[in-house]
Image 1: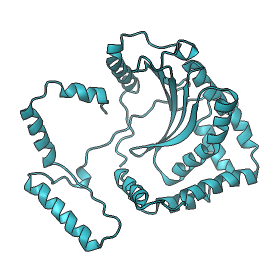
Image 2: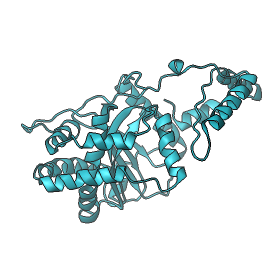
Image 3: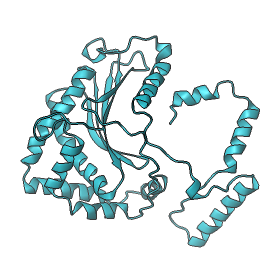
Length: 317
């Protein structure tokens, strides 16, 4: 809800007494979740939990039940024919790179749509890289991936370039989505199954270390899903997804036009961080004093929140 810059500004001029008072207030309503994993017994875990709980209560903290946890609201990107664009200058005045990310917001998490976004990202990754990076030479970083933000799913496309303008890059990403749709439609059953099986195998890879396995479990806690068999369950869900199912979601979430060729609305936002290359990549860079960059970025974010009327997806987790 607040940017790093806003948090830093909030700390300006804070006194020791104000800091201590704030921390004490926070600790009175703190909730703790702990995860023990590895070479230990259940009694060890219970003993550690009791110790942590005792220490917190003795310091005057604790007492926040799960049902009273504060909401983690995620802004709802308004549907629009054109991308909502946020254009800001790079903070480093010597950085020649321009970075563009287009984020397509999908909606609240559910197992089927979650694995669908994973599948689309898996299918798109290589052809996107081959077209924009290898053939079109748009930049050295070209990728697509999924995003899961406090229970809201999305897909994003990212390009970092010193050769093309942000405007040209955004247009090229959209054109790739349109062009690849036909290739996706013509994909053979064997090719589709190859992608499906490849994703399933990736999800079922064994953890390379105890630390990695622990991280997987811990992410289920921080994401409030608590699905200890998440990868297995996702692979089981993948088995029921046909190519037609994936194409339907491709059209619904990504395509800028409908089947009749008319423009359609998508929940899409583009962030353009424009560098100082001096060539095409620096076109559209806001002309502001470098010392005002943080405030300028903050203003653009506030403007987008206002444009979205601060509407959120409500309580999801």
